[in-house]
Image 1 (cartoon, rainbow, N blue to C red):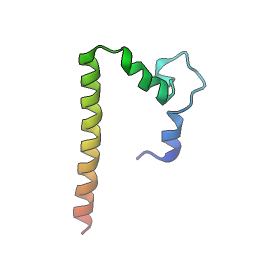
Image 2: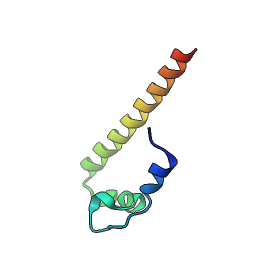
Image 3: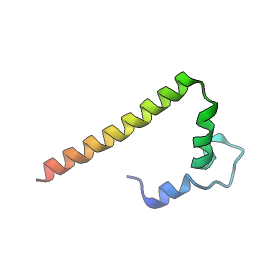
Image 4: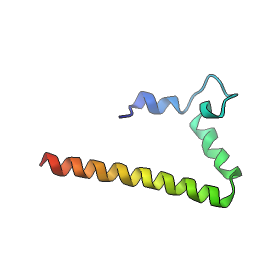
Length: 65
């Protein structure tokens, strides 16, 4: 599971030469340069990740009851 420290790492980077190490805000800005279909695919993946997270959390809550 991620922590606040893990999330904070996305906002900083010591090596901006590597795209994988770009800060989160710069990655978000780079979405604008993608083709529309690539943007839509990325947004669908993000939505799917959030949906899966919510489903897992809800299932764990139900199991704990």
